[in-house]
Length: 289
Image (cartoon, rainbow, N blue to C red; front, side, top):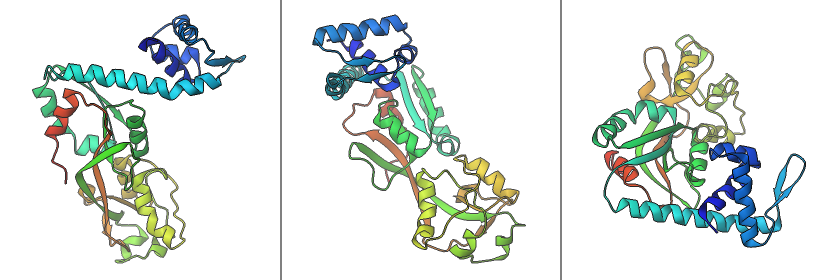
């Protein structure tokens, strides 16, 4: 049982297609099919039921799946641990981050990293918080820098590197600008421009409204804080954004509740071996707070 056959099997499971798995692994469809067939011959069982246009795992395939993932992960970690013995900072560091952190927090650290370690290559994926956690859990990225969950999954390790103070804002000509201390009920009467409902930041903002059984009018959700700021500045609604983004285009409103603070930091898979490149970047970031 070789690793390449297991990787082909896992790719077919993930994409539910031999052709899509072939594209993901940059192989021909016949090469993927051959590797899966070799694996089935070695194990003396059928792993997939082939239908007209779809495939599904057999019982044998479902039993193999978690074991195959463990084997591939152990082989990957073992190879990485051996590579780390050289102390050379090279190779590819794949990382997920939000647009806000990528634009406003990371640039000086990424600049220093690229200058210190020219042999290392950075691959950045811009994802929302939920997507970043999922990418870490699926080992699609080495680590993520994103808004942190209050109660992360058991297999996730996270550490706070920044604390983002959030403030409620609107445009100077918005009706709420005439109310110094708006209540939750008053805010709920006007459209809000907020992140999408499946994000950690939205949940933080929406929590006091849920407690009062109030509905938010989130008519144009977007996870791009710069876009939110623009839409708020032209009077399309109110929002909650990092204090560092507030300027003369916006009026800060007194938030009718506990001070809003979101924790930003590192998300990694617990017990996963990190490359020398990943460790080098973490050492450049601010210490845990």
